[in-house]
Every structure is written in structure tokens, then in C-alpha cells.
Image (cartoon, rainbow, N blue to C red; front, side, top):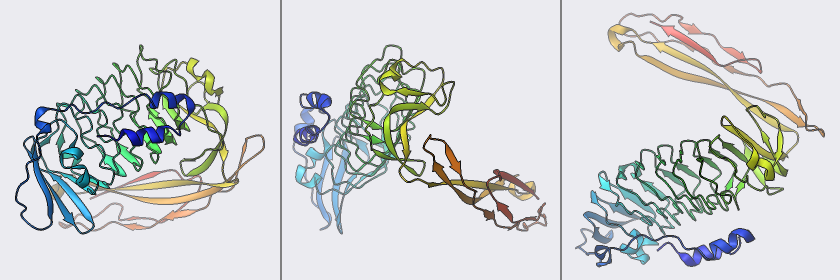
Length: 415
């Protein structure tokens, strides 16, 4: 199960304060039921490419070798609690490169460590097919998983109370979609994103946490360029170590997160801010919006800041390259209002994009000097004639030069 030895080896290299905790804590493991302990039933292989088969709960599963890939497919039914990698054998689990979930697969109430230790899995197919409506425990559910992307949009997490270590040690994870998550019953998010070393943008703006009790080391060793937790926190939540050991450069928080230590900056850390490479130069956070916009506050004082709205802060920084280019996309949207006789007043829309840039120089006093915007253009557009004799009005949208003064536009064409 979720490899403790590896966890301790990695943790040993971390910040000294975090180190003591990590070396004395072990992630909660999935409950082992009597059925889970029964050896997996082996059935006759249908063809030479099938290298393993069995049943977990009422779900049949099979392992198929497809060229260089080994695909684990979980078929319709109810999964039992427990560590899936162990049920299909550790030898096979280390070879699996893709996991496919068929429609109507039901996750167990205790789904802790369910997909843990599939460290060579590059892709999950059909995660939206997994019915999670009865799940209460997602501890270490994807721990040490090798996928670069996890799309969990649509999952029902309304009954979940434990999300601790859920994505722990997903070292290759670059993108995770949890925008549909209901976190209103979650009490534990400790180490949820522990050592997600390639995860740089994390949108948790939908996370409402009225019952949260601990988020200890939630983002430890996670180099986040931008983190949005605008709805996070509650009046009783004060976990001073939530950001300890994390490397966060831009952060959006809201009124509910109070009395919380902000991340301690790591000077000379390079990060990406909307396509511009920047380097951390100090320990001050600057508000980018709200009544304190432009105010610099030391990270140690941020716990005392009160907010009545979501505010985005950025760590003290300067561009890695000076001067640098600033880019802007200007969009023209064209809406075709199709005739009601044939198309029920359907509107077909498409966009024309023009990309322009200018040079920006950071002066010694931290003011900026801007160069002239480059120019681009939107192509001429000729509206098509529609079957039935309807003529477009206007029939043509002229080509237009786009510069720094050009705003986004919308053009409506009627038939």
C-alpha cells in the first residue's frame, strides 16, 4: 500500500520543521475487509494479450497488454474497499500504464488508497464514469499515481469527510480538475497535495470548507505559481502550518481565511506569471486588488490582514528578463443569427483573434516604461448565403487593423 519507505525518503530532504512531522506520520490506509483478503479469482484468458483477470466486489477487471501499454479495465459493478494495486498483484500494478473505468462503476464508501501506487499509469480513461456518491473517505486515493492529468469534474463528493493525502506524491501531475467538488463536509485536507512537484496552477476556488478542522502541510513541497482558495476557511479553522513548506508565488484568499501564516518566500525562485518569467526577490506580498491594492506587507504580518472580499496577492518579484515582452489578445466575435424558418433562431458564433505585444522595462525604482504596441489584424469576413433565400446583413465584415487601443468587439449578422 501507498509506499511508506518512499514517502519517508522524500520527506527526509524537506524543510526542517516539516521534516519532524513527516518522519513520524503515516498516511491512513484503506480498511481491509475479509472479502478484500480473499485471493483474486483467476479466470481463463480469452486471448493471449490478456495477462490477468479477476473480480473485485462485483466488478470484473482485466489486464491487457497492448504493444508497450498494459491496460487495466474495471467493468460495471460495485468495487470493494481496499488497495486495488495490491488486489491485482504488485508486479502487475507496476506495469499498468492506463486505467479504463467502464460506465456504472460504483466506488466503495471507503475509497482510501483505491488507485494508490499506480506509479506508471500515464492516463485514466472514464474517471467520470466512477460513481462516488457514497464515498466518505478519499485518503490517499491517488497517492503516488503517475498520471499527468486527472479530470475529476462531475464527481459527487458531498459525503466525503477525509481528503487527506488524496494526491500525495503525484510527482508527474500537472493538471487536476476538481471544480465540481463539494467540500462542505470535509474535515481533513492535510497533505492533500504533498509533493505534487509539477503542479503549478491550482484552482480550488469552489472549495467551501465550513467543517474543515485541519489542512496541515496541505501544499508542502508544491511549487505553485498560482493558487486560488478564495472560499477556503471558517471561523474555527486556524491551521498555522497549512502553507508550511510550500512554494507559492501568487495567492487568492477570501474573508473566511483569517489568522493564517502566509507562505514564507524562497528568494531566487523562478515562476511564471501569465507567461512572464519572474524571480522572487523578497518577503513582501502585494495586494493586486481590493482596498489595499498596491500595499506591500511582510509575509509574517499577513495573518493579521482582514478582508471583506477575495484578494489576490503576489510575492515580491522582478522579471527574470528585463526588458521583456507583454502580450495581449484582442478578440472580434461574429454572431450569425440564422433565420427562424429553418434554424429556430439559432445563433452560430466564432471568434477572430489578433495578438499584439509591447516591450516593458522595469526601472530601478520599480516603475515601468512601456514601448509601443505592435499591430495585427482581423481578416475580412464574408457571410455565407443560407438555403432558403435569406441574405445576410451585413454581408461583409471588413478587415481591421488591431493596435493597443483596439478593444474586443462583437458583430451581429442577421438573416
